Length: 176
Image 1 (cartoon, one colour):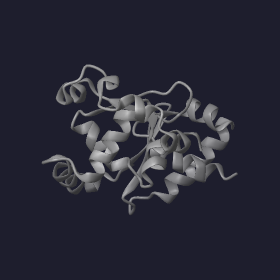
Image 2 (cartoon, helix red, strand yellow):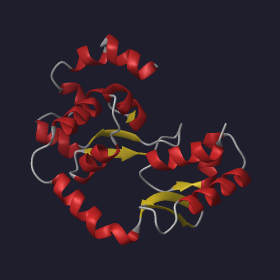
Image 3 (cartoon, one colour):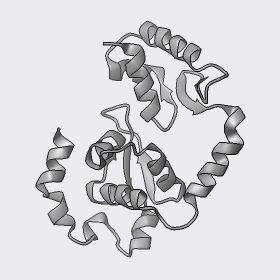
């Protein structure tokens, strides 16, 4: 088991800073191995990389290179303007009907990486992210604003909600 590779994956999927203690507990290893892996990742993601490892106190997060802020902001601005794309609608629908779902679970259902799409939906205020007490990975749900825009007061009021909750294929994907 390559802790550095696993840590890199966890930091990649996390959308906010993670406490080193939480990472240590979730990965079932000791803090010295996490620190060693973080040093390795910091060396890997040097000033020449578009990604950096940022530490603030006892938390760590994978972030974009600050020299790329203007380009990243331009990209994000273009991504959030206008109507939702097909991929955004699909992801939104998965979150709506599966609720309290992690990013890897969404990606298992959709079959593609959803990091940018989820971030876009959060920026638009359609999806919210919650801490998951059972895991390092956060959970995603529809926001109150999304429910309001859809004209419902609860996700259970969505069309065919019950049939999707009991859908064999979706339940198999989530369990695998």
